[in-house]
Length: 252
Image (cartoon, rainbow, N blue to C red):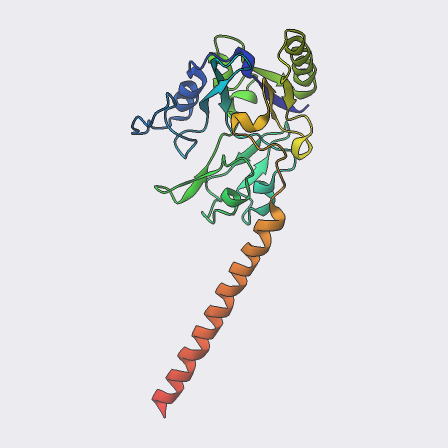
């Protein structure tokens, strides 16, 4: 049975409890940051921050400023281009839908970083490998919810069977629209053939920093990856030929 996390942005208060819980469970170090005009901290997802609460300032029809919050992380796409371009099998899919990562097999090529349409796969300069949210497989396969979900105080994060969460999300969207939230919508039901982190949004995805129509990126990444490998092979052969020729002349 496919699992998923539902993020209801209308219930998020920006407490960042999910962000802290993720760091604690996975032993991720804090990042040294500085104030850059936003309450967000750190400024973006990274090898040390797999889940981040984004703070968005918008202006309503009444001209008044209002906050929008979204707890963001890997979407665990059904059609995951990061998984498709991985040359070593380091990225793989769990039976219940999560896109997991085997650090022992990662060679640091960064093809997945370039392929991800959401920008959630990041390169770790210290380890020479990539990192991202794994959806806590150790917890899920022990019958527990991901750490981020368990700490959410408002119910903005839910975990369970994907089909049930989709039904729950559609009802929530209908409720918000009935209350005058005309921009309320579901995000993740069909994008990239279905995400395993789905969202109830109050405005267009772009407002929350999400692509309106995320694209499967293999077409633009994989050919360049193959070209890079072939170029390396050609250069290596050329160098070997040159070395042998020089060696032969030396013997003469």
